[in-house]
View 1 (tube, rainbow, N blue to C red):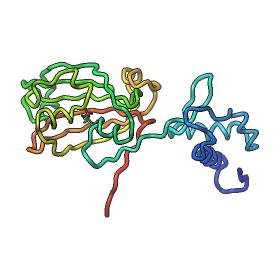
View 2 (cartoon, rainbow, N blue to C red):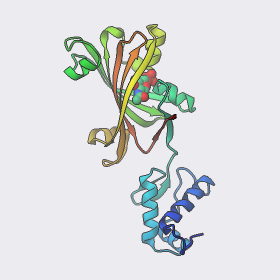
View 3 (cartoon, rainbow, N blue to C red):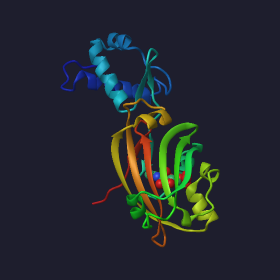
Length: 240
Ligand code: 16G
């Protein structure tokens, strides 16, 4: 199993073996893997080496640790394509997951100057400011902080935002969504968001800032979404 003479470091060989065992469902999602002690006996290597392999797999999101209980196999990350202007609701349904939202804030405000500029409105014009936790099968996946000019959809209310914003705009208000521009960056979760997303205070997150436009070119939302890095990976096709 472990080849001590191989040029491949032993901890990397162990990582690969653990990954294979997860693929073969020898170690199942949501269940513990054997302890460091057991694995070090199995592979005939030091506990330090096993720990290094496990730490790498925890950092890459394949495993997670629970204090005093053990190391568990994590749910596989969701693969989110970066092309295609889809909504959270559509993305989750396409995977057979049940989307739901908790609306933490819903208010009418006059926006900060930079937000007004991005939305191409004057800073005196009102916007809805909405904070939602987005869940898949009741598990928190992301937090969205959204600004929507009131004039885009003046009837918008808190209840409606438990469902899909894009569906409301397209179906109820009969406007067409055209395109969006987005930026992605990595960060460490804020204290507030770590509680909302139920992740550790030092966990990494992926932040996407999206400005979306109606087909006539008018911006209708500016969103800052904070995604759990242990639940998401983003993929894109690139051509040469
Ligand atoms: C996605 C969008 C967000 C949009 C939301 C609408 C990103 C980065 N964000 O989460 O901009 O507001 O979908 O979802 O993809 P809904 O129609 O389910 O409310």
